[in-house]
Structure formats: structure tokens, C-alpha cells
Amino acid sequence: MLNSMVEISAWIRSIRDNGRIAFIDIQDGSFAEALQVVAESSELPRDCHNGAAVLVRGTLVKSPARGQNVELKAEQIFLLGNCPQENYPLQKKQHSLDFLRSIPHLRIRTNTFLAVARIRSFLAQAIHRFFEREQYYHIHTPIITSSDTEGTGELFSVHHKKGTSFFGTPSYLTVSGQLAAETHALALGKVYTFGPTFRAENSNTNRHLSEFWMIEAEAAFLDIGGLIELSTSMLYYVLYELYKECIEDIRLLSTLHTPELIEQIEHLLTTSYVRISYTEAIDVLKSAKRNFTFSPQWGMDIQTEHEKFLCEIHYKAPVVIYDYPRAEKAFYMRVNDDQKTVAAMDIILPYFGEIVGGSQREERYDVLLCSMKEQGINPSHYTSYLDLRRFGSVIHAGFGLGFERLVQCATGMRNIRDVIPFPRAPGLIPD
Ligand code: ATP
Ligand code: MN
Image 1: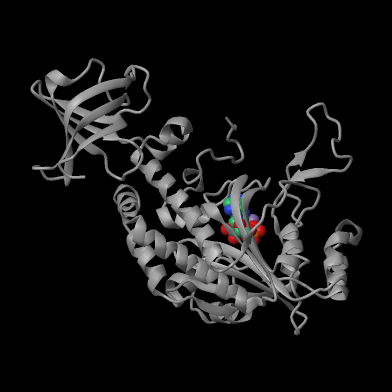
Image 2 (image 1 turned 120 degrees about the horizontal axis):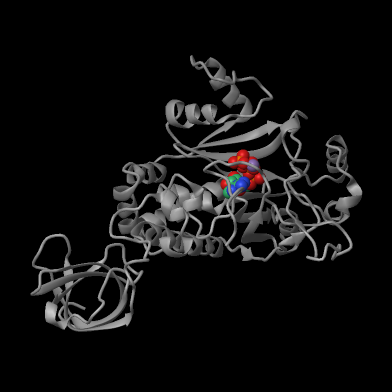
């Protein structure tokens, strides 16, 4: 490419013009740093401002100045789209993420959001590559459903605008594709979905969205050990690929927002995941000489302060916790022989928290029926789910990975609303 003639259509990021020579930084979305165009001031068309779209014809040359390797020596510049400066919300100065969140249609034009968008795209494709390599089938599960998989009641209902019940039964936006994925796993063997998920939870945190994307894998003949293997190797694979291919974007984000980002990703790539049972985790927490706000007790929910202690202080590694108390968990998780715990697992990352949740599913008809009754779930709403246990049932397991949480980890963005193009969360009015 060097010393060859090129033609680039892009947007102006900044312009410095001393009346003789102009330096114009342009960005077309494909690279981390803007490309510097050098032109004679007399060659500049009128209205060449920050934000305007231009077509530049010129030669790529090695840059004599520091700060960039190459620059574009312009021969001709055409103005494609004017950008009146008076009303343009993106000025050259750094805007706060808070301000940028108020203009989602324009924030994508900043270096931060371009880098996040490229990483998001790369990770999505890497996930598909991982499952292709593992010979999983990609399936599509429905978005409108009538079941509340997680049993939490945090559902958005779907009905006709005129108020009529459209389907003749209460219907909701899906909170998880798991139940549908299980039907396919018990025929196709190994499947995954990657689709939008909706939760009407009123959690105004920097980890929760009302609409997020979830990767859910489900496989027959897989037990909890195999599931832990699968989910941790997926995380390793996608982060390693990202580190290899997108290091410039990672560097940019670490310079702009999170200085420790590169180190954190390297730590994840060089440290093995610690695997401990919930009971062991509680024992470790109990013997820690710490004043936790919630003092650790068998049966309790593991809180953020506990996760932080385990990952960041005690093990200094990502931690997989498995075999949780039965009472805390969903009806479909497989009851262990101790009758007290279920074969559920969570992956907790240092400086981040929970990223993956999964379980081996209860494949025994009688035990499943029993768990449903214990949790006050009406089995008649789950006849097809029970059918899977009546006809050719086998052990199987699956996990869910919140895609935005993965993007947060990979970009170091602290607020989940900054890793999805158009965030939906309580109080944010959809545009
Ligand atoms: P949390 O305890 O963080 O609310 P959860 O236990 O409700 O998570 P699961 O129902 O196991 O989560 O969902 C699987 C994965 O989906 C989680 O591990 C997480 O990565 C992601 N996830 C769950 N809820 C949300 C949300 N509201 N916004 C974004 N991602 C989410
Ligand atoms: Mn939740």
C-alpha cells in the first residue's frame, strides 16, 4: 500500500490549517487511530470541518513526523457531506460518557465507541467460530414465549396494541432460550443460540440491561464437568483471539478509560480457572479473617464482596463455583446425590464478577416433577419440557453467557450501557 495511490471516503475528525498546509485527521471506522491527511491549504474545499464527510485521493507515504507511521498526501479532496459546526454536538474535546449516552446516534463516531463496536463485532464472530470448531449447531429460539424460564417473574408482556390478548394466552418476551434449546440438544446433540433476551428487572446497576444478548449452549451427554470445560475454553478462545487480532483497539481503550485493561486480559489468558464447590467456597470465606457485610453461611447467596475476595485476594484467578444449594436455584437444575445441592455452576472473573451461569439439567422425570412441585410450579405449563424426560431422556447440560458482560470485560467499559449500541434500561426511553 505504501507509495501507492488510494482513494478513501471518511469523516473528518479534526483539522489544523496554518494557511499553507492543512493536517486533517480522518476516520472511516476501520482503524483505531485516525489517518492523517496532509494537503496544501489551497486544495481544501470550502466547509471542510470536523464531522464532514470527504473523499480523499492521494498517496500513502511514510510519515516524517512522530505520532503516526503513515500519512496520506492528498492530491484531491472532495466534500461529500457538509457538517454545520453550530449545531454539531460532537466537538473536538473529549466528551464524558454520560453526555455521549444522551446521543447514541452520534456517540458511535467517537474513538471509544468505534473501538467498542469493532471489539463487539469481533467477539460475536469469534463465538460463532468457537462453536463451529466444537461442532455445535447454531439454532434460533423464539423471542415471544409463554414460559418464565428463570421463574423470577421479571417479564415483559406481549399483547396487541388494542389491548386484546393476541395469542389467547399470556405471552412474554423471552428471558432465556434454554427450554427451546434443550429440545434441540436432545435431537441435534450440540446446539447454541445467540439472541436477544429481555428482563424487566428493576436493577439499575452497571451490569444489567432490560434488553441484552445471550449466548446459550446446550448439549446432550454432557455433565457439569464437561460444561465447565466447555464454557471456560470458550472464554479463553474468544479472549485469546481478541488479544491477537484487536490489540490496537484494546490499547486505545486502555489509554482512554481503563489503564489496567491489558493486564487484566493477559491475566485471564495466563491463569487457570480455579474450580471449587459452593461448600468449599463457603468454608474458604468462613476462615477468611475479614469483616464481610454478609457473614458467610451455608445456604446464602454468594455476594459481590465474597466473589471479590475469592477471585482477587484468595485465589487471584477466575473462579468456577459449582454445586449450589438447591433452595436457591431454578427447578430444572439436576439434584445431586446429597439431595441438598444442584449441579449448577457460575464463572466469576476477577475485577468483574459473574459472567456465565449454567447447570446440568434434571433429566429424571420423577425428580423434575418433584422439584417443580417444591417450587410451586404448575407441571401442566411444562408438558413439553416433561415430555423430553419421558421420551429418550439423557443427561444434558448448558450455560448462558451475557454477551454485553463479555464485551465489558474485553473493553474495560465500566457501564454496560456503553457496550451495546442502543441500551434499554429502566428510565431510559427507547428511541
Ligand atoms: P445476575 O445475578 O448477574 O443478575 P443471573 O443469575 O440473573 O445474573 P442468569 O439468569 O444465569 O443470570 O443469566 C445468564 C447470564 O446472562 C449471566 O451470567 C449474565 O452474564 C447475563 N445476564 C443476566 N441478566 C442480565 C442483564 N439484566 N443484563 C445483561 N446481562 C445479564
Ligand atoms: Mn439476575
